[in-house]
Image (cartoon, rainbow, N blue to C red):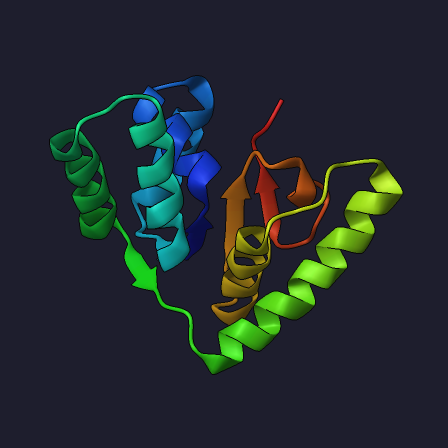
Length: 133
């Protein structure tokens, strides 16, 4: 299985070359952390999309992937992953990661899946298939 973060879904919807790579992984099904739905909705509303279009995209994600919810175990694992990503970001001179990044990484680890992303916070992690740059 593959975990898709917001980056992968947004590239998918944009129809970019990176999105085509993400799409190939979707043929076997995928996992989407529930918080990614909110991130995607926020992005499209900020860009002026109407509710109908946002809901259509979120429903597409629901149809194509399993939604992974946050529970106590994932909350703890996400916080630990966030701390790890923060240290990595500091070493690499990146901005601080978001808590969402910790949740996405913890989801990949909990499901023993690879994470498809273009987010530089995940670059060079064993769990990541990096499609950025």
